[in-house]
Image (cartoon, one colour):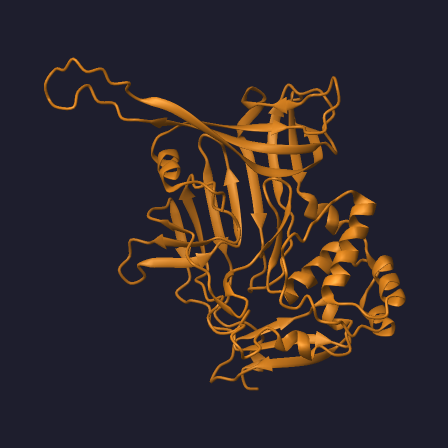
Length: 410
């Protein structure tokens, strides 16, 4: 969630005066356009979509490119492949308008309603296309963040070469080497910073022969990064400043204990809301494929089971995944997938102008109904449309029980 104080959020919602989008070109050379402001932007054309999970069922590891679409007018310069930083500036009223502190005339002077503004980054990426529209003075810009470029960059030859020439390596060694190679070949810099996944120190039992049967010519760096994120129960996303971030949907209380994520924002009203009658059931069994097509099952049984079933690229290359899969719950207080850690209510909602909510946030919506008073859920996808008539759509898909029906009787 974009960091704003509750006081500022209230003013942005209740006393909004004006919003505008500013597109800046951080690498602009002399003589090139450095900024596109509201005077050259068709306001209602603005749309920004970001997601960490777009599957019908809940899946860990999502690394999904964010997309921005906007129409500009009167811009003659070529825009394709230009790096952009996009900002939202909102002007709002502050202070109260009172003629006096009582009902009678007064000699005191009051400043009345004043204005203030806030400007925050909301997107960073590269323009993929800027096609002229039927009105030839209008160009429609479509831009993606850096995950898109990762998804277009093949890593099969590099990955097989790394496996062939590295005798022993951990999950973290593998991803560090992959990201270093990604930066050399594309210029995209992804830093793990202080992130340390619970499976990072596991030595991978990967053999070249198995890897060759799994990795194909279409394998990309995003495929590898998604597999890494899934094995550490997280997601990858590019933040508004253009930095890669790992998102967890749980709280790390200590090095030996996790708990359910706290609610980030309570939403008292909405423009539209639909939700399922159920909350997704706790996960009690997990299945990871290894050694190309063998299955490793882990968990505990109940009357009806909710299976998390993975087709992880990295584990499929391994001849043994016992230490990796059992690390999802080591029975010593560490739990990264089981029980109701990820239980949520699937929903879609249009909420009023809350552009600071981001994928990965946990929200609570007051429905106004007696039978289901609140919807508590994660935000898996967020779309912002318009500027002054700004709408924010939030979404989380899901099924009551994870996994295929044939596993229910096992």
